[in-house]
Amino acid sequence: MRKQRSREEWASIFREQENSGLTAAVFCQREKLHPNMFYRKRKEYGAGRFIKLHVPQNGGSGIRIRIGDVVIEPGNNFDEGELNRIIRTVRDVCDARLQ
Image (cartoon, rainbow, N blue to C red; front, side, top):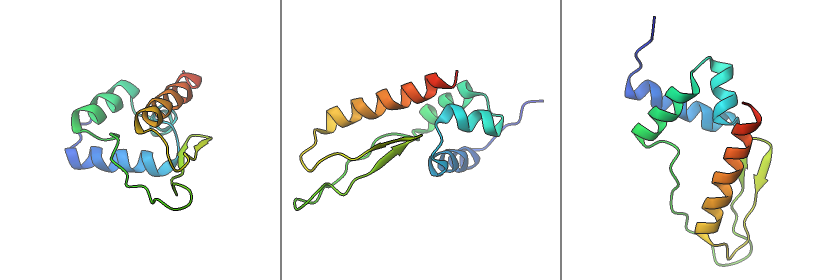
């Protein structure tokens, strides 16, 4: 029988996935969630969207992004659009490895 989850339960699942450092595909496999449902609910509830970052002007960006076993550390003057494209590509590659 299918389990109906509340919006709050899905929010908790999305936070758990983000905190786990696992790709969505690996996390779904581990938690026995259907990936299509996970992606659909994430899109429906707006989880996993990018946020605007304010970057300090001195030194490095201070930003470190970990997706699976990939770490991205953009420099001080990174292009936000390019960073978004890189992150999407890395996520896609990590998810494709698991299928």
